[in-house]
Image (cartoon, rainbow, N blue to C red; front, side, top):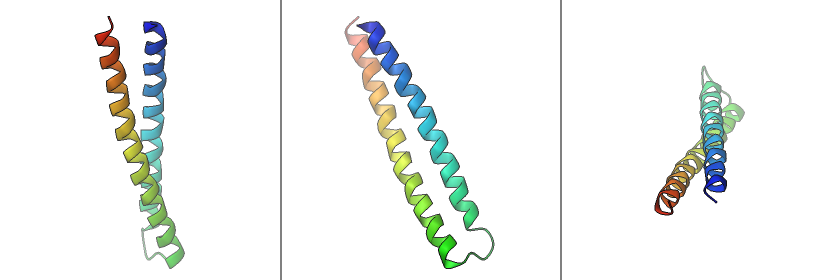
Length: 78
């Protein structure tokens, strides 16, 4: 059972890395849309991208807490 939980932690950790990378890339791309004198369409797209980045940041925070709880759960059952 501990092996199954360890694999779950590895999977969640990889998902955490992927989500954090996507949030960083999306945020950077959104900010780059605002460089110069952006037309309204680019400003709207940048705003949407920043909202997506905010949502992904919340997902990273939640995932980190979930991984921490999994690790604590394994520690209690050993």
